[in-house]
Length: 298
Image 1 (cartoon, rainbow, N blue to C red):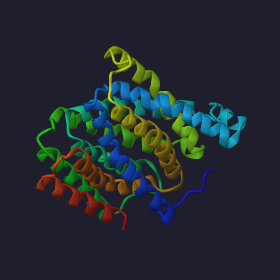
Image 2: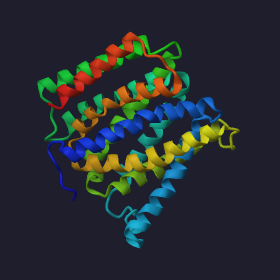
Image 3: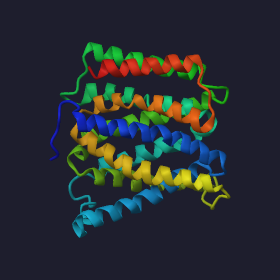
Image 4: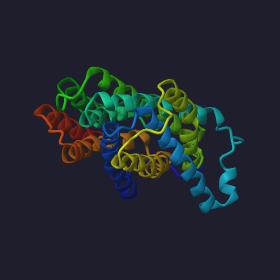
């Protein structure tokens, strides 16, 4: 069993802040690939198809044949593992079409409302992670910021349909985090949790890509392929492996609340890389998000 901690230490804070930066750029990379000829469901499939074998190779190099045997389901993780893979697939089935319909700035802010779903669920279903009144106030403040962003937007490229799809992805992401923390998945190596995510989602993603006619190789630009590489190797492989390692060792509610930093970093990335100019409403929303983060982590 992995050692559990009741609060975030310097290592946990440093790693989750680094992940926030990587995830903030993620939506920008996805938007770039979408605008450069790479279809949404093709991206979703290729993320898992690239990151999955990388994970298997990592396990073999690190642990030898024992690392591959670790991926078996004899430890009772099969059903929660498959459910986590299903939620992972649903997240990206909603996220990529949502990013295509809205701006990267809005998408990154709305996606990380998943922390709100996580905190609510951990409060009710995970003993020892209940939130106090001040922390509830922080979550409400942060969610108010997300709502302001959704209503008024970062620019004119947003849409209600895109926003709702990204919110659905946020709910699936929050549900995945709670599932990992509340089941036997919290007591297995983080590599195995990620394997369930990547390989468990593939059938659903492949079916969606086939249905939409997106399984053929697209005529995408070089920068689109570079963006896909970033999403698959840096985000889907390295950052998710680190995230599940953190979830197994630290309070999930507080970890997820810290990820409210991601919208700030993502909006900056969208401004610098895509030229998406923030509006005053987006600035107010981000201030609420960051203020809520401070209250939740008091």
